[in-house]
Length: 154
Image 1: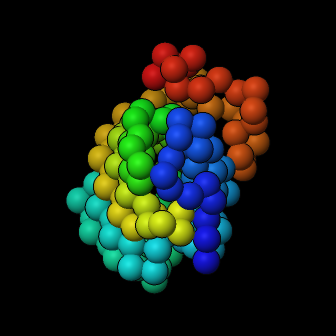
Image 2: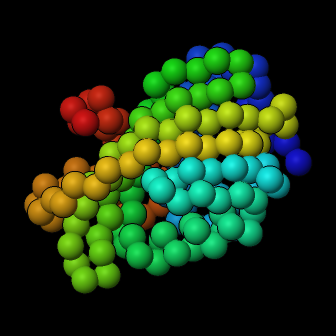
């Protein structure tokens, strides 16, 4: 299974890869997101360590059950031939109604087929008031005309 764009990355294809990942994660569907990772993909997400599709799918399912109203923006930070670094922010609501904005950085390493073999994520959560939310689009992909992280000052 191939997941274009494929390495080696250019700035343009790295940006395409980042936006494709953002759009997939904004689907909040583990069955859509999981195939972008290699069968044995290794993750560190905060302090949780995962490997393979079954663990990734279970993690994402748990995540989006807990993180309601999830909206994510990713931004390319740097890239090499088969690696991409991104910074991101996402807003979400707990099942009890509290709002958070989570900030983080991810390091990605890709197999030649364009699937992600390694994902290392560091994330911090900031409680916010509902009135401080900045991500106001209908659930799903971020509209092309919505501000990015840099424009929002995040």
